[in-house]
Length: 200
Length: 200
DNA sequence: CTACCTTTGCTAACACTGTTAGGTAATATA
DNA sequence: TATATTACCTAACAGTGTTAGCAAAGGTAG
Image (cartoon, rainbow over all chains, first blue to last red; front, side):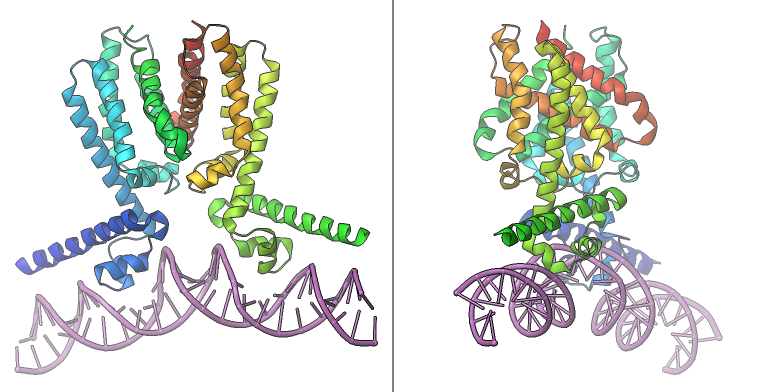
């Protein structure tokens, strides 16, 4: 039954080519220029073929969102592994998160801004679980070693993530000039306020 | 020359009716359901009339964004006037910002998420100036009274705004269940970390 | 090898979207 | 009363996401 496998493999190839084409189009011309017809043209198939692989345009965006979180998680793991103490791990992950966002603005845009993340779509991103636990671990260690006041680790994670996202989000739309001046400082200010606030 | 004035007044009426209709449509069916044709139908005019008042659909969104900031500014002023010390003012404004966002999610969505705030559009929102100065003032007072280390007030404003936006943004998409539990706590955690961090 | 059936892929359409060209009828000015 | 302006509309263009229905190729069974 190698035939069925070959077909399945080919179908998989088309699927990934759809995602690759979509991603390339986004990198070239931005999210607003992404359309089903353009994807179809890029992969040299007709439009309905895309709907054999994805039920929606939103499903394609969802998949790209997952890709984004997978890559972000990898960067976070890499940063975390380099650091030793939980304090340094949290700090390094904050920097890595920030760096990922500004290195891959297109990813960051679809992971948040676009897709209009409703409750339903958010729950479909299993990668968010890995993301959470990645940050949760050093926070729990800090609590266990008594370096954090008696707070809910989920609450701390939530605060950490929220603030970091806010920093990235606001700084990404910043008005050209004073942007470069503040960019680095703002992150340092956050690190000082949140992360090193846990060391005491 | 009362005729020209009457015409001008009427034109103004149509303009505001466009904005009112757009806003009502958004409140009813969400941003995704807002279209020029639906607005035209609601105000009982043909489609091109709308383009006599707004060059774009984006221009309508921009105007609604400004409305949102105007209302937010009002709430901030109200909160600030109730408080006495600069510390309490900053704290009260954080609460007011949070409350505004969750009382008017549609406004908050267009002010940030939608419109894809680029550098150009952001610069067109003059209300952002008022917003900034509103928060900047108590921060500067804190610096002047020596309660803050020698930092750039703009940097502190930036951090304050960013974190607050992040909190709101992440908590708005939260997954139903643990949302209600954390909502209040997260803001308190922020206040404790940022505002009371300035008191020392 | 032929008949059948499933899969694969396409054309063409539907119902929308934002935007605009061009014409008509009403209104105010000379 | 003639003219110019304004107000407004119909109709179209070019694009969007999505789907119904059909043709052809592929593999399967008699």
